[in-house]
Image (cartoon, rainbow, N blue to C red; front, top):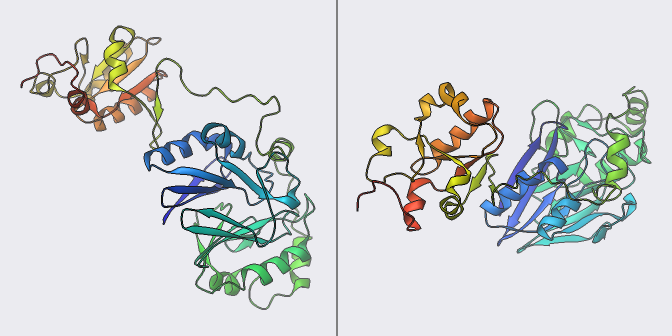
Length: 354
C-alpha cells in the first residue's frame, strides 16, 4: 500500500493519500492544493477513486468537487453533516474500497455532528479529522458540536482501537505528524489518563477561542462539497502551452510542442558551454545561459514572452524555473526530460554528434 501525508501551510491541514493496486483515495483534500494532488496522482500512475472528508470543515474549503471535475472521483462525506452534492453519504459501518484495501467508517461526532474517523481495514492506521488531534481535540462550540458527544466518541470509537494503531489528525499547528492510541490514552491533556467526562466538558466550555477566520466562507462552500457558488471551475492553469504540473511545483512542457512552436518562446539552455556545443547538441534557436549565471542575466530576458528552460535531463532546468520565478517571471516551463528525451523522440538538434 502507498501512503503519503501532505500539508497545506495556509490552514495547517493534513491531506492523506492511500493507494493500492493503482487505486487511490484522498482524505481531506484542500481546494488550493488540488493541482498538487493531481500532479502526485499522475506521477505515481494512480486513479483517484474517491475523496473522503472527515467532516464539513470550517477552516478551509475541500477540493472534493474540483477533483471530481478533473479526475472523475466520487465524493464521500457523512450523511449527518448535511452536505449536498456528494456521491456517497456515509454512515457508521460503511466502507470505502481502493484496490484490495478498505477504509472503515466510524461515526465520531462531537467536534461537529457529522464527524467521521476512517480506520484502515487492519486497524493499523486511523484518520481522526478534528475529533482527536495530537495531544488535543477539536473545539465543540459550533456546527452542532457537543463536548459530551466528543468525549464519548474518543473513548468508545478511537481509544478502543489497538494501542499500536497510528492516529493521523486533520490538523497540527506545532509540526507534529502522527501519534498512537496508547500515547493519547496516556498523555492527551484533555482526554487521556483519568480525566472524566465532567473534567473534559468543563475544560471545553472555557476554551475562549476566537471565531474561526474562514468559517463564513468555508462552511457554505463545504456544504456544497467545495463547489464554487457560481459553479465555475477556476482557470488557474496557464494556457500558452499544453503544460503538465509536477509534484515539485513547477510546469513541464512536452518536447514535441516546443519543436513545433520554437518561434513563440524563449528557449534558455542552462547547461555549461561545453555541453551546449557537445555531443547532444542543442535546440536551434536556444540561448545558452549557464545555470550559475542565470540570476545575473535574467533581466535581459523578455518579460511577456514565455520561457522554456532546457538542460541535459531536466534537473538543472527545473532549478532554473525557480530562479526565474524569484526574478519575477511568470510564464515559465521546464522542458520535460531535457535533451535526452529530445533525442529519444528523434527531434533535431544543432551540432549533435551521431
